[in-house]
Image (tube, rainbow, N blue to C red; front, side):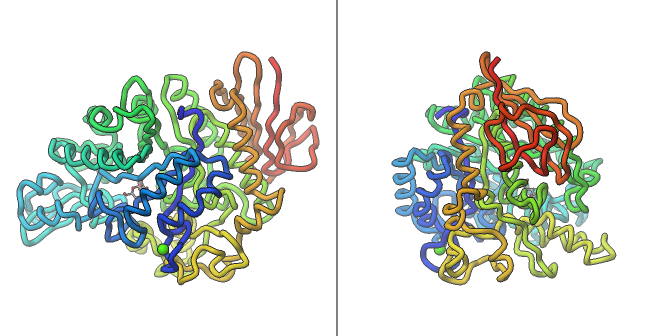
Length: 543
Ligand code: TEU
Ligand code: CA
């Protein structure tokens, strides 16, 4: 399938569907719901990591790349999933985490014992003056180095201390990684997401950082493109049907274009995150949100136009398992819930690129509210909160910030049937606790399937429209200069123009248009001189 024709969907495995009553979503749960996924119009299914793991970061800490964690199922279940997905023309995309391994991976266990060969699989540095080798900060808070007294050395971990960074400079490490990819290719996997892939190239010398976090030394490092080319050539590059996505936070337009341009032979596309930092105050995630819509418009326009016109390709999305639920973040939880959920979806679905839906957003699932700091589940939120506690005098403010950004928001389970226990997610006790009130916050799949005016049915209708419309799949894109809270762009070829107009606010906005050109609208009534709150419109014009 071509990149233009793909509709992606991300499944957070432990929260999707539990088939054996242990409270944890599993591989068989995905297989059971393939018809649902198909009914949405999805043909590319990304499943978060299911490999052996101590689950300190919910599977992004892999201890064996060749084995399936028994809580998610076994190899037979996986083979069955691949087979059933294939019958429905759905590509399964697995999530490979190669920037780091779990500290329980056998390579790390060897290294920890003093084995030089395996120490060279990671970044181990001699202890000089009982201080970390550099001042770099882990993305989950605290120093990026951890000391092991027994061998008197420090190792690098850009994420949690149980996630040790792999040394891609070591050719043996790259060989090991290629073997893993080939193993899953042999199993018939046709899609790979590469976790934080633009962090893999580390510097030769480890120096102190002026900005104090070290990002400048390892983000889009010197050998990134070289390694991606090698990975491509040695593994998936041999199969034209394989789709690959790089998760590349903080990549530049230039690097993203290069990574995703077919002639460069690196990856098929990238996930960029700049548009999801538009509410960070002072470029800091853990602050009270300060939404800048102008910046969002600029980034969406700039990135999509520049990258796609130079041959590169983006995966477009507003939610994933690391982000707050977008309807709560950028839209409305109450009065305009339907309107804002459909408006945000329409904004990104019709962009040039491959759209990615995050499980539950098609129901309009909302953020949750933890009542106390101790109630958070996610490792990032927990770590970060310990470092933030001294910065905030009031714990109410800190709790507000944590509730806004915490990854727990994204990890709530799917609502299949509100008549059933745990909304049909599991017959047991879910790994993720929701209050009675939270269980009622959004209608389930079953209820929305039976309501033609639901968010879910709007998703289906719009996906169908995208799939049937060449100008949206293959056409050009041009953002419009709009003031106020309107996001608008055109998708066109030589004959037809579609103009997408979205009101990203709760205000009515003066805006004149011809009703006869409207082909999609998320309201029943239309006034031709203003846009209603979160109104989403598609106009069609013949050239
Ligand atoms: O995410 C990388 C990443 O950039 C986010 O975790 C980000 O650092 C965080 O949300 C910023 O505040 C990937 C995975 O998607 C994530 O789930 C993993 O925890 C992380 O890598 C480490 O593997
Ligand atoms: Ca289970």
